[in-house]
Length: 99
Image (cartoon, rainbow, N blue to C red; front, side):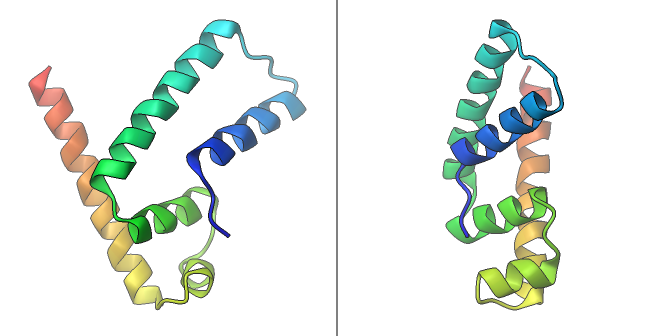
């Protein structure tokens, strides 16, 4: 199962509605802006495999579940998640120091 960024945003939005948390028009606007920026970053910085591993991690999958879903080893999932963390850290640091 591959989850797109739009699907992820819809899941979060649905959960907030189910919990009775109404979103203001401003928060919807900024959430959409944030999702667009994240989508751009992910498409530029992460490989398709790294993106799929990250999606599994964000939705609470174990390494074993992610490895099974992607027909890969747990070690490959672990390595991909380490690369994702390193890339995100590098991107965040470069953003902080360039501001």
